[in-house]
Image (cartoon, rainbow, N blue to C red):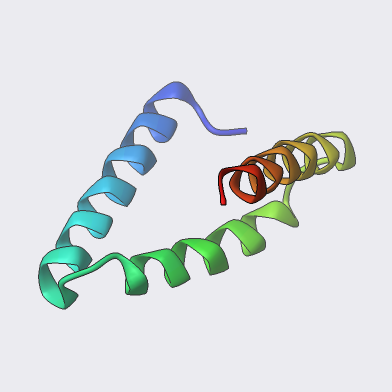
Length: 69
């Protein structure tokens, strides 16, 4: 499990990466693809219960986008 310090550092690094790639490419497309890959790789490290929790949360967000369109 990550410590609070590691979590804060990782969050900061993600934000810095995202901002830098937006400046470099003019949009978030590259960062978005990178984050999608990173999330899929990290997902495998979660317990089954956590995988189910995050999958449900993502499914709910996808449903929200369908309603908004």
